[in-house]
Length: 136
Image 1 (tube, rainbow, N blue to C red):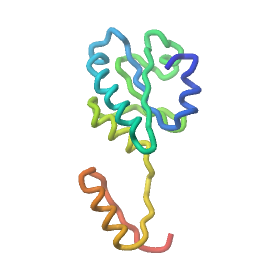
Image 2: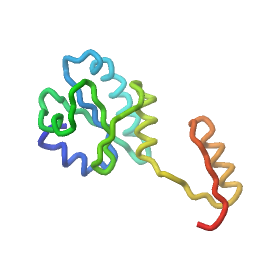
Image 3: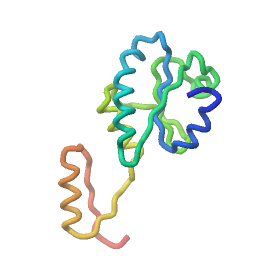
Image 4: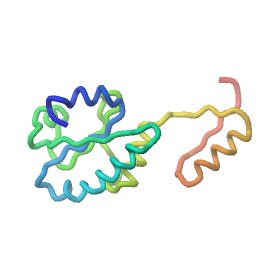
């Protein structure tokens, strides 16, 4: 992304992970293949999710606006509000983070069998399942 299209992209994609990088940075170069793999995986998500990159050495206006001083710096934008990325640096961890941050906060289930099916589906995802019984 660039200084010119950054704000439009943030509006167009309500949840977007953005990597601010420097082309000469060794850590950025190490992250690059994992970031590309994560982008491909997230694009095939249902619904598709996206991640983006900004060359902070060229796009100084946007980098300055978000206080970027080290590379790579990743920020997750949720409806335009940035939060510092605190996930891992491999494809799996990036994908899990973006899906978690982009997903629903809760899921309504009706009936004991629906709850059991949901718990089984969450088994390998390291998710916590809380069940509330009562009127909403």
